[in-house]
Amino acid sequence: MRRSIAGQLFLLQVLVVTLLVAAGTAAAVALTRAHARESAGDEVRAVAETVARSPVVLEALRAPDPSTLLQPYAESVRAATGTDFVVVMSPERVRYSHPDPAQIGQRFIGTVAPALAGESFTEVYTGTLGESVRAVVPVRDERGAIIGLVSVGITTEAINRKLLAQLPMILGATVAALALAGLGSWALSRRLRRQTHGLGPAEMTRMYEYYDAVLHSVREGLVVIGRDQRIELINDEGRRLLGLGDAPVERLELPPALRELSTAEDVFVLAGDRTLVANQQPTVFEGRPLGSVVTLRDHTELRALTGELDSVRGLTDALRAQAHESANRLHTVLTLVELGRTDEAVRLATSELQLAQQLTDRVVGAVREPAIAALLLGKSAQAAERGVELVIEPESRLDGERIPSRDLLTVVGNLVDNALEAVAGTPMPRRVSVLVRSQAREVVVRVSDSGPGVDATEVLQRGWTTKQPGRGLGLSLVRQVVARYEGSIQIKNEGGAVFTVRLPT
Image (cartoon, rainbow, N blue to C red; front, side):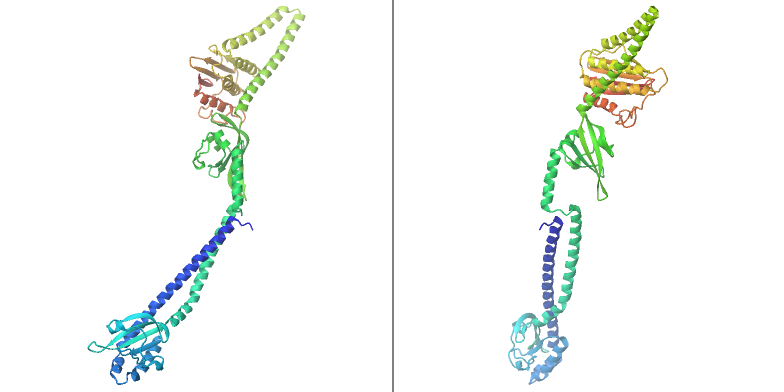
């Protein structure tokens, strides 16, 4: 039959406690017996010494027939003291008194040599009444000469009867100790059963092996967070994604990116140079909150590709809008020609073409990296649709791929997007200026706007945004790129926000 850990521990505790109580009871009985014999020895010695000093005994030992006086006296003392025999004898061991009158005149059975030497003593000896604890004391006359001996004893059977009288109390204490120990073991077993959910050792071993195998094999990061906001459990993928290394779990600190989460579904968080998608759910067992579980998926590459796709989509939308606008302008030019107003048609066509060509020449001439040039042209079209003037500063110069275009797209695209959002809804004129310049050992990106400015202490936190709440990941991505290149980012307000990013090459 399968037994839980709690059940096995309960049986083991009951067995151990029973053995301990039994051993304790046996020791208590042995100690009680030894104490009873010691007390009996003290008692008979005191009675013997009292009888030896009695004037009645001294007088009787000088009489022609000592037994006539000593037998009644000895029996009265025996009855009064509760002893089993009081024997008065001559130095030659001849009994003058005995509980069995037939033994009077017979020789005393036992040790008398120490008493004849003048020393009182006690011993355990088997005589005519059986085994007894006895004392032998010399009787001295006025000159100190030994004229007789007194032996007083209590049989072992009588001592055992006294012990049996105390046995109910000992057994009661034993039963009470067993009951108390059993109750404590039961309470401990019940608590352990709740904590182990009634599982047996084999089940818990299998559960640990399965859970450990699952934790190490799953390809998502898994972090179990306790109620005190500390990591209780983390798998290998979670350590890799969060960059926590191989330190023991009890030494791990919860990364700031996870401290900000509560209940979350598919929320982007930044951990080092990685973009992660986190899901966090609270854990509750039997109505009791235990903490939360966070799952992590690596979306670094996907997020970068998504950023590029957003830039291309923005450029496509801008080109579509420009195509629509160009169609309108071409229709206007054709109408002017049909009306015979060719001079006005030529001026309109050439002015629009000149503006577009100037912007293209300025961007392409300054920025030879095609992806960045396309991004800036697309952002110019988007800005024009929003009524914002996007200016590419004349000092802009970017030759070749000093830094991978993906990282530059992340920095320039997010800074320009946030600048366009910052000036949205502000009074005209609205202006955004962009500088992208490669210098001796670095690439400088500066984006300024005519908006209301920003708080530099909060702007780089994850979640800060000029858009709707919960969408502020772009500036954190910029900070991520800056950290990867060990660059710098400066934020100040000069008639609006000015972001300056420096990326060493």
